[in-house]
Image (cartoon, rainbow, N blue to C red; front, side):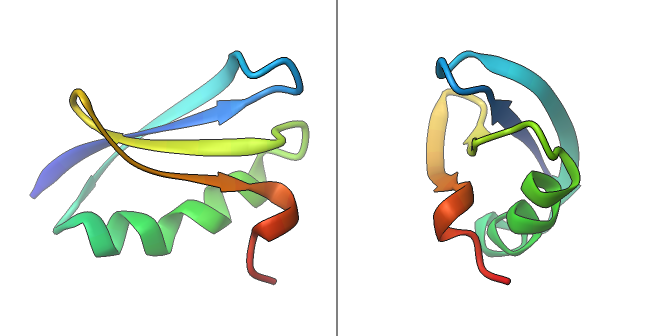
Length: 65
């Protein structure tokens, strides 16, 4: 298990909230990201990090249904 940081970003690009979750790998963390972004209705994007390595950025408009 690895610890992943999910940063919810506000309109100005600053983090407005974050979640820390343990996932098996990057793929599991990326699968969980859309639900976390949807749960934070004021967030416009989500950045997923593994320590100092940014894995992905997900914009709300591109978030799968």
